[in-house]
Every structure is written in C-alpha cells, then in structure tokens.
Length: 168
Image (cartoon, rainbow, N blue to C red; front, side, top):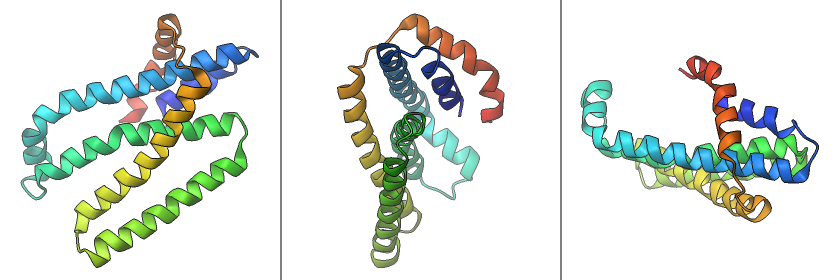
C-alpha cells in the first residue's frame, strides 16, 4: 500500500518517459531490496516467531514458505500498479484471470489430490505470485533498465512514511 501510493504519486510528477522509467526502476529496486532485508531479518527468528505466534500449531516450514512468498507478491503488486497507471486494462484483467486460474488449478491439485493441506496452499501462492513476479521483473528490467535514484528513493520514503502505521 505504501509503495503503491508513492509510486503512483511520483510517476505522474513529470510528463517525461525517462522520469517514469527512473521512478519505476527505483520502486522495483526498493521492493526487491526491502523484501530481501525483511527475509534476512525474519529467517533467523523463524523458531521464535512460529513458537510465539502459532504456539507450536504450525511448523517453521510454513513461516519459511511465507517468507518465500513475500518478494514475489510485492513485485506482483508493483507490476499490477504499473499496469493500472499505464492504463493497460486488458493486460491487467488477463494477468489477474491467469493468476486466478493458476491458483484454483494448483489448489485443487495440491490440496485435494495430493492432500498437502496448508502447505499446498502456500506452495500455490508462491508459484502463482512467482510466475507473475518473474514476468514483471523481466519487463521492468527491459523497459526501465533499472535506472534508479537515491534522491528519488529518499523522496519516496518521506512520502510513504506517514502511511506506515496504516500498514499494521
């Protein structure tokens, strides 16, 4: 939510394609870096987190799967926001529909046929988000060249900071 609002706000600051590529590249790098930082901080605490939050009812592997899902979902969210601001409605609907069909198909396969339970649901979400994230990552790298700006990054953080409490 925070990244989405900042991305939309700064994307339209200038009517210049190079500026928009710089905003997109900066947001993409920020999302990838922040998700990797979150994973690197949370992974060593997996035992403590699962023991405290789930009282032993869920194995650590589910927490690890959730951490694996995080960067894929964050990249997918930025990609979908990019389609919205570029007014690519058909592509937006098509990707959402593909994602929906993939989730239904994989959930039926992993949960119903292979009886994987909650692990199958997590695996389904990782696979669906992962495929979409790979597609968007390749697109962002090709389109924006991953041009980034530290000054722009700082402005994005300043803009998004007041939204942080709403994220929790």
